[in-house]
Structure formats: structure tokens, C-alpha cells
Picture 1 (spheres, rainbow, N blue to C red):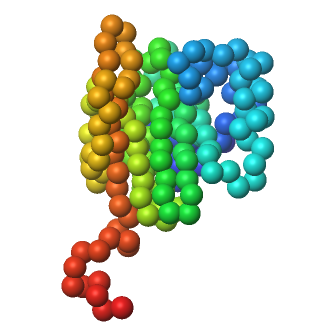
Picture 2: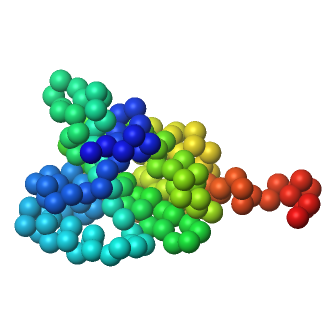
Length: 184
């Protein structure tokens, strides 16, 4: 069920489906786990609008990217995308038990940001990351994103708190670079 242009090296994006209720702990955007019945209710409530301003996609291991202990198409997290006519924001939720969650999120950033800018033609794309997610931060910077805001000690970690960083990228066709754009 993977979409070819929403596939990175290690993860692919796909719509959440009712069968994902069984693995809600991996993708549900909450600090607390939910059971399959609550996940099914949540899926029905959040996926009934034809033109939603908030959509959720499952992040799954891309076909061929599985390791010995993981199967292909394993749900490893989700991305929540809020959008309106001109801007989009992406927030990632990763399965808490994954040792490679940061690398998988980084791969997803490399898929989501260009898709929102080029295919969806958003004016601005914002991604929220915790300051200890170093691979994801590097992926955001590699995608041309710039740190625009920092919320001090906003994200809880076991025994400590870390900053929440907002990275943004302005779409190239909308950018004013000086004299060459004054011809119109």
C-alpha cells in the first residue's frame, strides 16, 4: 500500500487504516498508550472529513528496509500534518521502543518537506523537533530548513527536559531575492 513518491530509504508514508488500531502505541500522538478500541474510535473521528486541515499518515518501514527483527511495512510512527492554503506544519510521533527512531524520523523529514513544498506548493513548512533528536535536526537542515524558534525545556524525557525546536523553510517560488523578482 506504499505510495512510490512518499517513500524514503527506510520509511514510507501511507494513510492510517482501521487495521492500524492494533499498533496504536506506535503511531498515536499521545504520551499515554491507548487500546485498540479507543484507537478505532480515534481513527473514525479524525478521518471523516473530506478536506481535512489536519491529516495523519502512518510511517512504515519501506519494503526491503526491514532488519532481521523487523518486518517490512511495520508501523514505526506517524506524522501529523496541519495545513491551510499557504502553510503546513509537521509533527512526528515515533514508536517509543525503537532504537533507530531518530534515523527513521530523519528519513521521513527528507520525504515530507519536499513533498509539502513542491507537490502541495505550501508557502512555508514548519517541523517541530526535540533538541536531542540530532539526526532529525541534521535532516531538517539538509532540507534547507532554518531553526526559527526554541521552547526551553518543553519536551519531557526520562529524568530531564529538552528544548522543542521549530524549523521552517520558505518555498523558493515565493521568496523575494531582490532585483531579479521586480520585473513583474
